[in-house]
Length: 104
Image 1 (cartoon, one colour):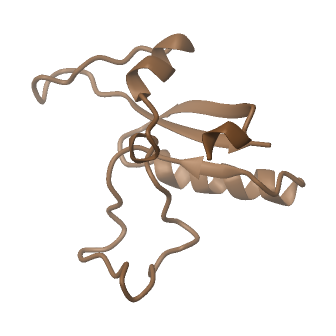
Image 2: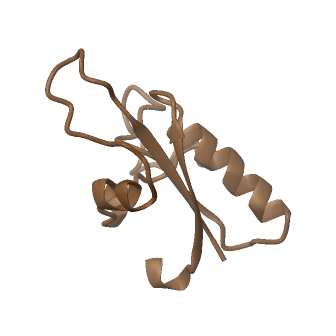
């Protein structure tokens, strides 16, 4: 799937906001004619207390897969593009969250 894309927008986001930003940017790009735009966020989906995947997603306009769920090495990707990311060892360590919107 990733081979279908040659361009992307990589961004750093506040905690818990990467998927929301990715979905909004994906929509803007789609409406601008980039019909294959695909937003990816960070970490697991937390839109529902209990996932209703089997019955159908309750939030399809907001839910997005994470980069890591799509096989993207997040650490390598963000470091190659000049962002800082390190393993978080304690609650006091700085945390960095990233999103990606694939564009074609």
